[in-house]
Image (cartoon, rainbow, N blue to C red; front, side, top):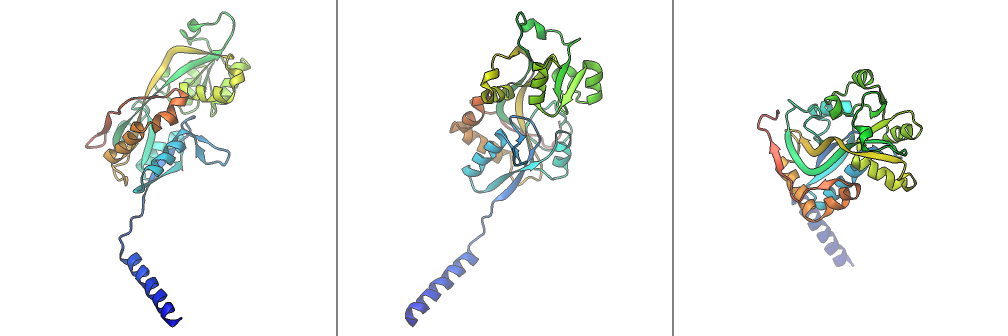
Length: 273
């Protein structure tokens, strides 16, 4: 019995020595901004950010063990300040027209395309011509968003004064305003309307959508200069997901175009546009 005990203690000591001497391989945490931008980012019932970004980070974390991507809640007006102050390392699903000019960081083309469309209540005789002129129509907009028709000026007072805009923090609210005829036209991403109609198929014939686009999104990521992961490493992970068809499975169901190959990292040496 004593021999067995000594042998067990020896094996235990040997295991402890191996654990102490082995190099640590802890994952490095990459903090990703979670600003409301449905269906990419929205608050789940738990109060934590959910949506397509959460799905993307889940597969990125399952793909490798060197980095652990975590969502950090932020707000649309605050996201770039959080980025510059180091509270987040990565801001995704961004457009160069949305206020990142002059901010140091690597620009990464994600190879994902979406579009902002005009939506109205469907009525007999109402067609594409309804969207040709915005003057005199009540617009339902998401507060803090940048719209092409307004020169990407997101100032609420400007939008209310110049376009009779009704501002909310919910695309669902904007769609309800259309149905109740409290607004004439709402703007939202094609992906959001697809996600909404997937959940509310009974409303499929209730809305008229425009072939006219307010803007086309070529989604980029902005990576902080001191981030744990490099632009090249992040691009390589996206390309692996693209090649395996996993980006298509996440984004394709909502009409987001997944390009066959991304243009990859476009880091600027001084980090400014």
